[in-house]
Image 1 (tube, helix red, strand yellow):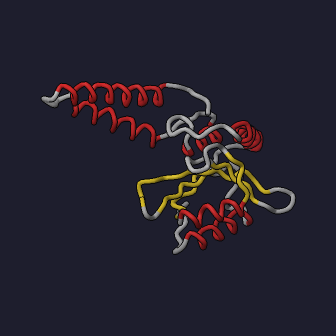
Image 2 (cartoon, one colour; image 1 turned 120 degrees about the vertical axis):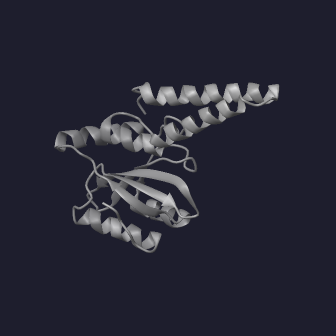
Length: 185
């Protein structure tokens, strides 16, 4: 489901409306982008609504530094500050028992530190939804780093070749670990 509105403020209120109508359910994820740097993607996950009617979200990003259970007012401030645009809703697929298990995974992550690799916002959303901490962003960046290292290794300059080998190994290791591990968040 794509959400298309003009402003991040309008999108935020549209998102809350979709939660209140049941169109968005517990553990659904969201892909948002920063308009100034479209390549930057952020993910967050809807946790639920408390008895006072306040909506809560699981979120982590480098500027926060750890996994946080954020209420709708805090998320609004973050969305407006970064001018996030909601690009996509990523539905959670599961029954009530699976939803409760997913929520517990999210709660178990609260307070864990943010890491660019293996503990980023996409890892968190996927871990909550599936129990597997995976990130396509990490895979793509690690693959690019590995390729860049390989290109550097073709240089005639020994120092560049050495640096390229190190960079390539780091990228390859990160890519392989991301692809084949069943790491937990």
